[in-house]
Length: 486
Ligand code: ADP
Ligand code: MG
Image: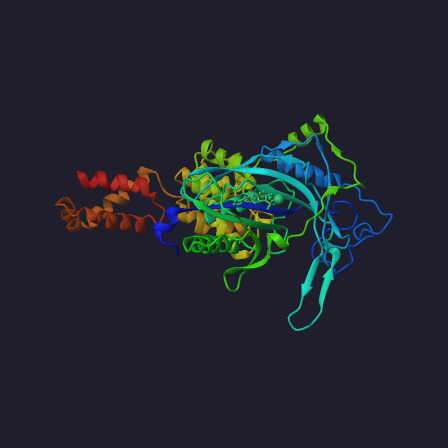
């Protein structure tokens, strides 16, 4: 941990490069399947291998997905973009070059708005979003000399999203990555699965004197396959770089790898050893020209984004920030909430049901809203029963809800009636019972009247017993307090 003095002296600066694998069924320039987990080297065509005489052809769906992301980030969509070859040798790269976008990316600029833990909002500026193909995968084994190569992933479609160096903490970086993950999943362009590598992130980290305009030399950290490791790597680099500067050493511009077991970063290669990629325009692909009409069509079909729903849930439905954040975590949850809200105006109660009893049920059964047996109309009716004072929330959630799960075809009201759970809020029914309670406990009544107000709970408990648990607590409290006051 750095001392407070040092964190006040040095500002952390982070720029992220996020790769998202596009959820297209075929690759970026070939018809090979792009699904994860197939038997090694079964999804590899001659185009992917770059055999002489083969030609790449752009996957239109991948292009559309990249534009969706650009529109969602408010980027400028390039009317003309083009592809370049990035040349380098590595065994997972069968062609000896990667097709990417260098000079004319499909999307330029844009921003992503975040809400941090403490509620403050931050706008993260993007530099660009471009399309590129992925490499294959090397599989190393600790107990054998050989490594294997699987080219199934080679050529699959990626977007790379590059931020400006404007993130200033590990927390902000994590919230940013989480927001990107939510966005690509809402947009339906990437499954967001970090374990399978569908979403990956490199972090560029530097430090500078707080208040200074000049950025420090950056280090690029690779191989962080989880949110937690991204945070750990950034924090580690911050401390390491501050430590070096404090003893008068220079930061070396280099690429480092994160060791998850040890919790540290280690040098992979320095900038001087870096490849000269010899970028040049890809001769086998024409530039991509987009028409206004096509862009407008993609824009019109853009689904609601988590950020917009978050705002809507706060502003229109009056939910606390906490609820809005949880309910927009996935599209499935927010859609269900919105559907529920077409049947009820008790929005906070709807949120409580989803974050409480329903969530517990889904967690316990390992299911999702997609196969949740109860419909929104029935939950809305359950909410109405509670709001109208016909049943208490605990009766609704502990007695009616489990019954409803077993018999979703029966209405909550019918269940409440058949189980004799409807609360008695009729004063004509409750008043004689309340009077009985007071008559039977004359001693306690005297104590109450001489100041022992805590006895109210006792009288309530007695009335509940007499009404067989059906007294509406609000009405009952009012009746008893009035009787005791006389
Ligand atoms: P390079 O030429 O090394 O590829 P770029 O300028 O293309 O560097 O930036 C790559 C990424 O590094 C971007 O996400 C950018 O925001 C980030 N970056 C650039 N300079 C710094 C810096 N001094 N500190 C932190 N991140 C930086
Ligand atoms: Mg670069």
